[in-house]
Length: 341
Image (cartoon, rainbow, N blue to C red):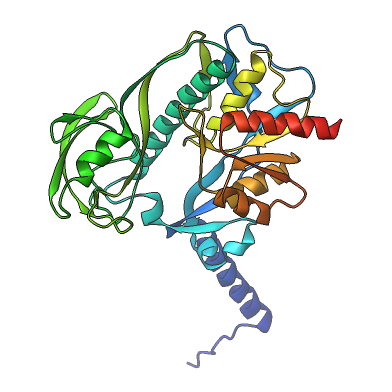
């Protein structure tokens, strides 16, 4: 018996090859890599998220916008060709998830940072409106932990340090004084509040590369405070986390209290706001600037310094306004209004 060998036609071979390529492309598109990707999101109006007791949304056609970014695991194809998205930035997992921190812990920390920034924004705005705001220092809030620092895997963003070596810590200067007095390589004991929990940690110190003879533990901190507001302010940011919308929230709260902040214009703002009204740098400036452009907003308030310099690279026809403080932001907006007139 003779068995004939069957051969595939060129058309069938081409179809099979195309199918394999499509399947490989689908895998590259869907399977996650080990890196994260930052992507722009359109700027959003703050007004629908904010309710101020006795306040009223503006009706002059203006609005304050905040900007966030998408952060997720990059797919394999995004890892190979990040340029398929405008403004995409690949970020090592260690930069997004410090040592010992899980994805869920990062999300929880981002939401706690958002809650804290909302409290600060309300306090700063109400003070600017002439209200009496009670704000008492309660410790030192951890904003960032360096991935290669002794504190990595021990301390977390939004932890509040209330004591060091048994001594009360109320302001950042207290912590710097106690840690700085240690010999590099020695251990400092920190008492912290993490949500509703109280914990004790021993953290090794290292030499401060910028100041000889001083020790650090590798964290960036700000002031934690008990805040009591004279008016009820509610901000519903949903699943958005992080502190960078603080400036935008403060501007909108003041606008709703009857102060003409936006002067009938659409204004985007980003920047972490502190209790004293200072505006401090944030991350993701490239993506946020692109998000402002996509929303058709032409004025963007950005923390002065490196943030503003970077924003100008991607601004197009968006006007970048650098600011150091909340009051400076108000003055800048008033000046823009006069020029527009």
